[in-house]
Length: 116
Image 1 (spheres, rainbow, N blue to C red):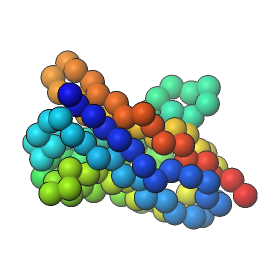
Image 2: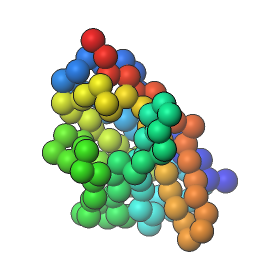
Image 3: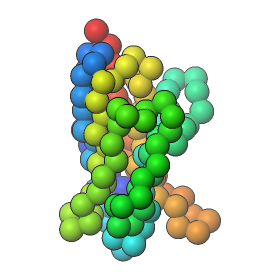
Image 4: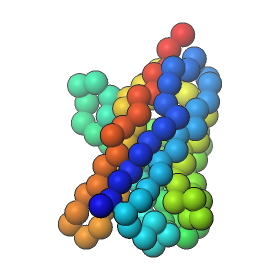
């Protein structure tokens, strides 16, 4: 079955950096576009970044452009989210996501807290 396992969250000061990882299994990772979403307390889940299968095409939410970078290593079945210049408003649970036709697959989420 499809599994997505995130890691790398934690507590960081404003201006700091974190790198999230998501290991995928149970599907052909190299053929699948991958996404990172986040959900802050009391807010709806929002799409943060998308990377297409070859890694050459990426898209970002306006709120993270220039600060976050999504990448992937298809040999390791892993997608990454490098987050720099973090702000308190980036505090959220971050989820790895894969959509395959009408099916949606989510990881368990990893907490990112930006606070001094």
